[in-house]
Image (tube, rainbow, N blue to C red):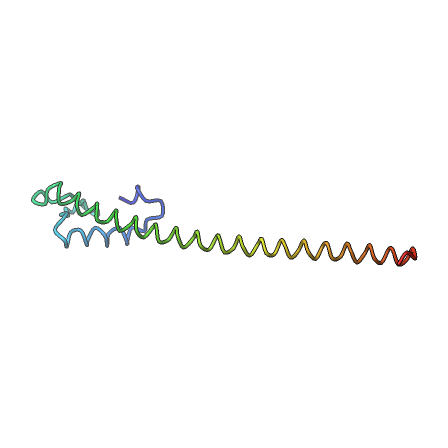
Length: 110
């Protein structure tokens, strides 16, 4: 099962499998230091699919909330950067005007 998840912690995978076993969805067979989990025959594919679909919808909702949160943070960051860029540009323009005025004073036109 760890092969399907890049950063899966074997401890957390075993906890999830234990929860499935406690729920009567899978059974465990020990072979040496390995544990082999299989779908419980009395459960049937329908009940297992319904269970997994429920997990999928919970995951989708969680992902949607997370994505919305990330989107809001990106939007806020973008607005801050735009304000920063605008204020930076205003400062540049002010400095140019001040240098131009200083140059004009030196020449004596003002």
